[in-house]
Image (cartoon, rainbow, N blue to C red; front, side):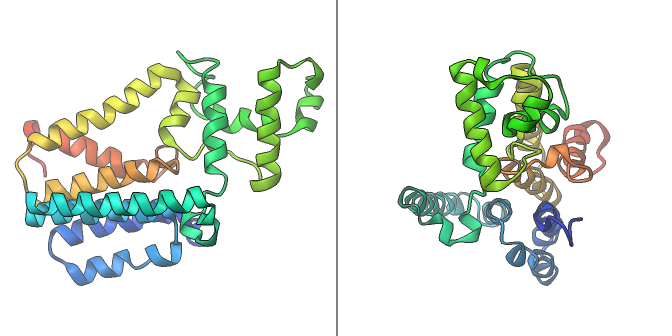
Length: 256
């Protein structure tokens, strides 16, 4: 599926596999492993790769690299923001939102209806969101649109438009937003805690190429999760979870 279906699913692997090679100075191997990123041509795969490269520069050159990385990041964000404001982003495939902006907005509005515990747990987004996208499905389940509230009518109208524009969505294409939808603020807190605990143990660990490579793997997948859904997919989820377990248990076991 990764190679012959949705090739963007391979993005996190291409980036994560290249990270250890780069930090261990296997540069030719890193280039080879990075090479699928260009044909994948996905904005969030590029973002993940940028995270790895930025962390490598910070590891290699220290604080001197941070200012340069920050400046490049600001310039890139300004350029991309200008493209989106002008509407020119559709000219570039790696900037094409493919319906993400709309799905994020709709998902957040639905999630706000049940903010504490969410809409039923893992996988409920894929089961429920098509209900908002398709009028015929609502009718078959006995839902009369004329009796919906004004807010619900706005949501279903936007979801139907998105369906005709981009097709069926089985994910919100933002891991943290989807966790909020499925598990509410409780789940979102735990997801953020997962990131924070990794950052804490990673920041106090003895700096080494292996520690930095594990950090690059974890944070690159987290960057990818802002526009995709790796934590909902096996084996994509194993990349950050393995890194998390190794880093947070290193002091007790010394296994790195």
